[in-house]
Length: 158
Image (tube, rainbow, N blue to C red):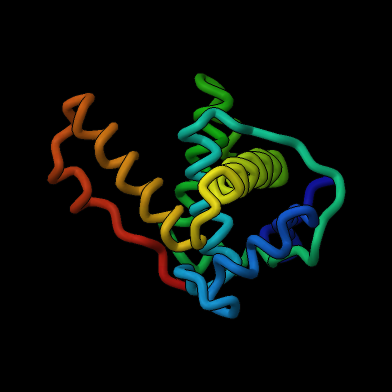
């Protein structure tokens, strides 16, 4: 059954509720909302090729929260396109649920990766995130991507 964007919900992996809280503003984390936390986690999951299913969920987030930011919605759509190359119908409204599931699974994989980094380093969450960003920046520079590419991307606002 297809759900409209106003009815669609984005699930949060219950096993990572504590980490999501820590990373969000309410837990003194760097992200302004749980939606922003999941966006970051999904990008980490995608970067590390970690798309991981989950069954137990915390309270879901209305998809409309993500739609308020064109960058967030474009990111979710992009993950769908990357998972289904050559299949333009993945962008249809009828397949929104499928795109959201792909996003949720990459977010879960990213949260698993982040938690692993925290456990391995025994450092503060912010220190771990900063080191992850530094490593990603070094990796980006080592493959020769132009540094000015970053000027075209801005974090979504909610």
